Structures are given as C-alpha cells and as structure tokens.
Image 1: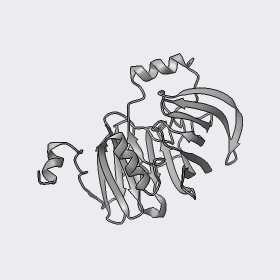
Image 2: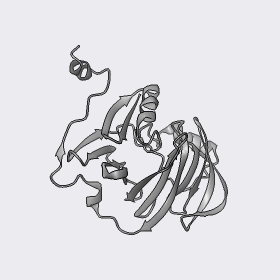
Image 3: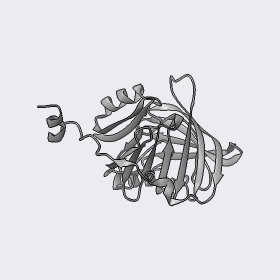
Image 4: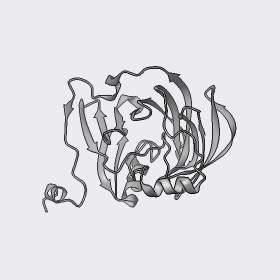
Length: 239
C-alpha cells in the first residue's frame, strides 16, 4: 500500500494509501499520468536501501539538490502526445520541494524533513496535508533504492551534468544530474515502473523564501479523505 496524490485538469483528486494496481489505473486518468504523481513510498534510508547502494559499489550522483534552485521541466509520460510544463522549487538541500501544476490549478509541497505532503487547490482556496510516514519519492529526486553507473559528461538547458544509467526493481532509465544534485533529464522507467521523459528547460539558482513552501494566507485547511478500507472510509460509504 502506498499513499499518492494526483491532480487532473478539473481540479485535484486526493487519494491516500491506494494499492499499486489501483494507483496506476488512477494515474493514467490524470492530467500527467505517473510522472508528476507524488508518492509517499518506502523510505530510501532504510537498511535494505543502504545495503543495495553498497552492493552497487556506493557510486551515485548527489541524490537531492544541495543549493536552492528553481527548475522548469517538460514532462511527458509514455503514450502522451505532448509534454506538459512543470515548475519546481528546491530548498534546504532538497528537504523542501514545491511542484506547480499547469494552468495554475494548484501546488504540491513536499517536506521531506517533517514527512508531510501539502496539496494546495487554488480555485477553491483550500489546502490539505498528508502524513507521508514512509517517506517521499517522486521523479524529480533520486534515492538509494536505485543503483547507478556513470556514463559521461553532457549538458541540458545550458547546464553541465553527468549522464547516469539508473536501475530499479521496475526497470532502467538514464538521468543527467548536475554536480549539485539537480536532475536535468530522465528518460525511461522510474522507481514505480512508470515510463516517460522529463527534461529541464530553465534552471535558476538563488535563495527561495520559506513562504514558497507554505499555503497562501487566507486559504482554508480541509481534511483529506480517509484511507480506503479503514473504518472511517467504510462509514463514509454508509456501510
């Protein structure tokens, strides 16, 4: 079971602790299937992940951005005809991340330090917060559950990066990562088995105010729906 948060063109749909097959089916219906679905997944710092990294000789790029940075991406899941523009912000060595949806429908804020996901819905001026108790993983960040092999130097969006072969239990990908941990390009299968491509189009380094990682003033907090299968969820269905 995993917690996931996805958005579609008409607004935000929040799901908590969905099973993997159901989550994948849901993602394919959303505006950006899979690639920008934010997943509260197995914590990358577990002993199993660390052991796997050691087995891979311990060679890997920086796993999160080490500097404050804003990155614009084009993201294109496999089978989607046109890429979608996504804007992201990273701060506190990747401890804070914000992802803006297209058309300004809303934002998703990931706080890896408190293991919290905040979903902001602009049309309704509301937000919701989810407890990502098992950690946070998404296609813009790497983790130690992956194994890496260095390929060579390259550049994306005018920024130098190193190409890496990336292997997970779900498949293979290539990623171009800067020396300070920014993923500029990723092509292939991510850690959740979802295939596609993301590529940076603009990279801007500089301080990012903490307010970028907070719900806007005046927005109302709403409680997320209960996880499927829990007593609260069954009560909501009237049975």
